[in-house]
Every structure is written in C-alpha cells, then in structure tokens.
Length: 564
Image (cartoon, rainbow, N blue to C red; front, side):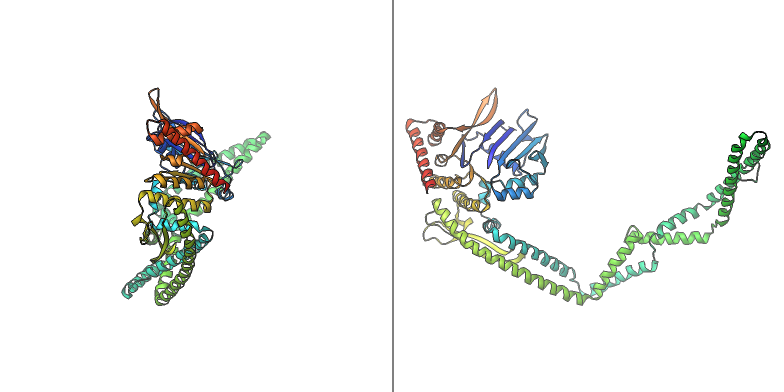
C-alpha cells in the first residue's frame, strides 16, 4: 500500500506531502490545478521521463518520494529477489533531478532507473488513457490473457522460449550452409590456400620475438663491434690508458707499502678483487667478441623470415598464436565443406527435431491459453455487465501465426458485441473511448486479484462516460477499493462520491508565484467539492443537497456491499 507521496520543486508544486489510506482514494480539482503533475510525479518512479525544465523555477532540484507498506507475500518475495531489504515492511522509492541528472534510490541506496521501475512494478499499477488504447493491439491482448493464467502459462512460455531459441539457431545454421556447388568449390579452394600458406611457413610459437631480437642485433653489427672494441680498450691491459693496466699499476704500488702498515691490508684485498673482476670481464668480453659473426647471408635469411611472418600476421592475426588458431578454425570449416552433404543432412534433421519440440511446446501452451480464455471470457462478461454493458458478449478468438515466435504461434483477437443482435466484431472496430476505458477497468479488476498488486492508480477512467454508466463505474471502483488500495483522479461526482478518502487539488497564486497544493477533505468539505463537480462555479442549496444525497447513497451502497 502507498503510505505517502512527497513531491518537491516539481513544476507548479513547491512541496507537498500526502498520506494515502486503504480503500478508494479520490483526487479531484479544477482543470489545470495540477492533477496531471501529481500523477506524472508517480509515473517518474515507474521510469517516466524527467527533464530539467520540470524543475520549479528558481529551484536547484526536484524530488519525488513514494513510501510503501508491503503487506503482500508475493510482492515481498519479488522485492527480496531484487536484493531489496525492507525495514518494518516498508520500502522508500525516490528520484531526484539535479542539473539534468537523475538519481534513483531504493531505501536510500542508489540504483538504476530500470531497477527502480522493476521494484515499483511489484507495488503499484497505473492505468491511464494511453494504456486503454493499447488494449486494441493483439500483442497486448495476448499479454492480458497470459497474465490472467500466469500460474500455469509462465512455465509453458519459458519452455516455448527455450525451444524457440534452439529452433532459431538450427534454422540460422542451415541457412548459413545454403550455397551452390560452384560456391562451395571456390570456398574449399580458398580455405586450402590459406591453410597451405600457414602450414608451409612452419611457424613456431614465440619465433617472431626471437627473430626480431636477432634482426636488431644483426642490423646493428658494425656499431656493436666498434663499441665492444672501445670497451675492451678502456677496460683492458693493452695500453697504458686501459683500466686493467692502471688498476694493476695501482695494486703493485700499494703492495710495496702494505708491509709497513698492516691496516692497509683490507684496501689491498679490495683492489685485488677489482683487478680480478677486470681480468674476468676482459676474458669474457674477448670470448663474446670471438663468437660475433655478422655475415650478410644470416642477415638476409632473418629479414626474409620476418617479412614472411609479418605478411601472415597482416592476413591472419596479430601474433603467431592467433595465426595458428586461425588455421585451426579454417581447417574445421574445410572439413565441414568437404563433408557438406553429410553435414547438410544432419542440420536438416536437427532443424526438424527442434521444430517438432517447438511445435509440441507451442501446442501445449496454446491449449492452456484456450482453457484460460474461456474463464477470462466469463469473467469479462460479468465485469462488463457491472459496468453497464447490459447485453454484452465477449470472446477470445485464436488464430495461428504463419511463423513461430518465442511466445508460441498464437495470435489473439478480442471480439465483442455490446448490443443485442449485433455480431461479434474485433474490439478495435467497436469500442469508443469511453467503452475502452470501461473495458480496461474490467481487465484491471480481474488482473488485480491475480497479481495481488496492492495499489492501483486510475487516471481518466471517466473518459466519455456519464449518467448511469458513471454510476456503474463508481460502484466497480468501490468494489476494487474493498480489496485493494485505489488512487483515482476524476471529474465525475458519481465516482468522487464513493471516496473512502477524498483529496482536493488546488492551484493558487502566493507572492506572485503559482502553487499547486493538495488537501484532504472531511465529510462536509467533500460534499462541497461534490457540489462543485455537480454545479460548476455556483453551488446552490439544491446542488449542495444533491451532493449530500449522492454521498449518503454512496455510503449506503458501500455498507451494503461490505455486509454482503
């Protein structure tokens, strides 16, 4: 149940906080008072568009918050599956717009708009003019039937969806194999060329790195030779400037004076170590220089091998391992093409098998849908009679689609006759705007019991109706309100009179600023508001008495309903 709505800095609303109650909550007000803004704020929690121009003039942000008390076990489990932890059974959904950026939170924790929408979908359902127009579309009609029979239909739909995916993959695989013999021969020749080119190269993983290192060495051979010769000259014993010769002289001089001062022994040992290191270094340097061979043939072969590997990389992959993986994949394609006839027959059999499974699952789903459609037809007739369709007939007509879908092969058409003697015709060919509104109200009343959604919101439910029909709609709303929390925005006094809780939305000018506020009405204030709905600008005594009588009759109806 929706406990509280808090809106701040949204369009004409500076700040309002409304506490809703169980049963039928009615909201009325003058045209342009801001009823649509109030409903729009709730729709924002359901993922509605929120733009910077919706923020109230001179305000830095806009905020919408909905506080729910969850009393339904199914909703509690669904929210728990979304990772939402409730505090004393309550859930707070909020959405804030600052500088064009929207931030959503559930119980104070940041979430995506998709997560917010999914959570809200388990807590409330909004019915507006756009939705009852959607009732004309076959896909929506099918969705309503599926929602009505969800306890059995959901599992069957999941099986159909899974088998359809398998069928689709088999179909795509077979379609991909569709080629003529000439195309197949060309493809085989091309694959054999690619595989042969890679095989002929006899690649070894890691070979490219080794060759690149060797190429760098060979291409810089002259510089390496000259630099090593200089190193040998600077560190060796072949000239008086060489480090080896200089250190040797230093060691001989130090050795002459050590006998006179034993404290210099450590210095002598250190210099001896340096002399030994220089000897070792020069010996290793000489050995290395002896191994250096920079012949043109080795350089040419290395360069040629690198060019080959790089050309293969340009065609088949960025590394040798990628090239070899490509070869494996192409080899598999080649094997499949060589065994084309065998594979083609296998693919056809797999498709036939997948189609048989899909057909079986779709047929089972269709049969269960037809079973539930008969129950739905009866429920709809009962509900529509309650809404002043006195001689109504309603039927769900099934047709088979030309192609399978992930939802089976059923296509529905809601057929209706609203007058005696008239044949059943498609809903879109018969229903007016007011009739559509009532038909969708009957649908919502049926699904509300199935879904166990605690809060239903109705906007423009009174489109195109008046008189006795309006009275029937009000009675239906009262019946729904006996089992669910209902919020209804209306212009009709017949519906407003049924309110368990009545709110008035007013627009006023304060300090040269336009404000929208919402006020809960007591019994007398509710009667005055009914008088305004009945009599317009001038509320006479007769109008007020009429309003009072309407309120009393509504109360009598609800009391009689509760006793029954």
